[in-house]
Length: 392
Image (cartoon, rainbow, N blue to C red; front, side, top):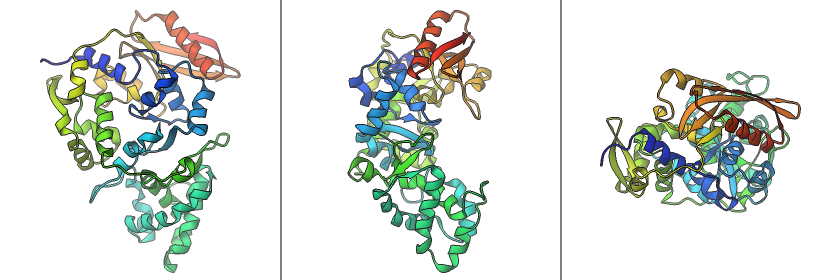
C-alpha cells in the first residue's frame, strides 16, 4: 500500500481528535482522554472540549472537573497542566516517571538552585516527597503560595548548614516573592505530580488551587504496568503516522525515555512511508487511515493550544513555513481557522465588557466567512458573551 498522503492523514487525525463531527456528553471521557487537553493558558481545555462537544456549556465542564471529578488536572507531558480522565491517570502521570538515568521532564532549570544549596537532585526530591502527604488534608491557593508552603515544610528536614541558603532570595527573577528553596520546590512539583502527590484543585477566583491526588479522588494513584503502552497508543492514534522522535517532542522528555516507551507497543505498529520517510501507525488504525470518511464538519475555529494543533509534523497542518510562524509563535499563539484539517488562517478574540470582538486573518480566499462568523458567535456564547464585532 502506498503513502497515505497529507489529505488522508488530516482526515484520520480529525477523526481521532473528535473534530470530524459534533459529539455528545456521553462521549466526554473518550474525547478528553484521546490525548489529554493542555490547560495553558487557563481555560484552554474548555475551549478545546467546546469544539468537540458543543452542547456542553462552561458550567457543565466545571461540574465534570470539580464536582463529579471524572476529570482531573495535573502537570503532565511537557510539564504543562493537562486535563484528562481520572481513569487514565496512570497513562498521563505514572507512565512519564523516568527510569534509571533518564532525566525528569521539565526540571533542567533547577541546576542554579542545587548549586546554591550544594545538594543533589535526588536529595531534595526525597525530602520534598516526605512532606507532600501533608497536602492530603490541605488546599493551597496560588502557585507562589504552594512553592513557599512546601519549602517551609521541607526546611526543618534539612541539615542545619543548608537552611540559610534554602531561605535565601531566589536567583530566578522574583527574589522578593520566592526563596531558593521555593524555586527548587517549583521545579520538583512536576516529578511530584507524576507520582500522584499533587494535583490542581478548584480555582479560587483568578488563582489556581492545589491539593493531593488522594484528597481529590479519595484514593492514591495506582501505577499500572500497561501505563506506558496506553500512553504510546494515545499518541499514535491521535498523531500517527509518527516517529519516536516526534513522540519525544510531544512529551518533552529525553530521547532515551521516549524510545523506551515506544518499544512497549512496537509489536502493535506497522511501518509506512510519509513524504518519503518511514513513520509508524497502529496496526489497528491502518485501515481507517487509508479509507477516509466524509466530514460532518469541515470548518473549525480552534483556540490556541488545541490538541489538534499540537502535531509535531507541522507541515501536515500548513506546508508554508512562513505561515507556520504565524500559527506557532514563541509566545501568545493565536487561534487557528481549520478547513478539512488544514490551517487556512488565524484568529484572535478581544473581550470588551460583556462582548467579544473576533478578527480573522485568512490565507485562502474561498473560506465561507458567514459560517466562520457563526462559529465565532457560538464561541462567544460559550464564554457567556455576545459577539459584538467580527472581521475577516
